[in-house]
Length: 205
Image (cartoon, rainbow, N blue to C red; front, side, top):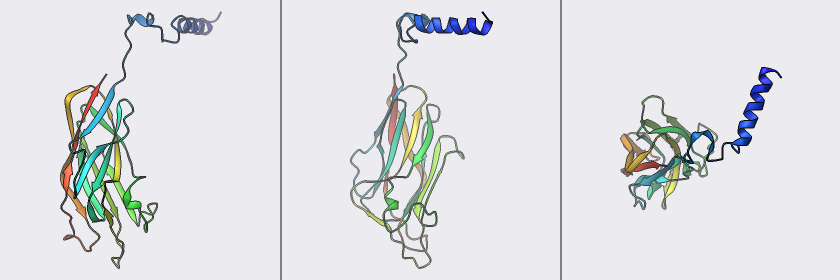
């Protein structure tokens, strides 16, 4: 028997004896089962009022959690620029999703960067995600904004908890500078005053 075959046979035997690592007596675990880390995001304002941009919970599979950036009661919403601050010692940023953004409502085409632009940058500053989400105005100034009445999603951000975070949790917040613009041109002078609401994340096993 070659050395490689001997090693393979030993590994197979160990897996069979341990029930593919599911038996509590194998591996010296003493019956302990490693529990998965489960993260939860809680909004500061779960029922936002008019003229509000808020963070709301999305899906949350185990240690990964989604934060939906929601807009409530804002007329002629054309675009926004903001920063999201997160606790980088216990949370990492994974990705952004713009597939459900109301900025993609007709008459614009979200697949055309000359009509709608989403910029998400997490590399320039640890613990911050820089976001710009906007329609692009044409020379005639005829591209409309979106009248948002009930809460609608601007985009979503997905994070992952990397360690336990005890209650009351750690904040995810909007960090200055923050702005929302309407469709009027040219800027400045077309800023819409809104209230910005963040939230907190906890993680436990």
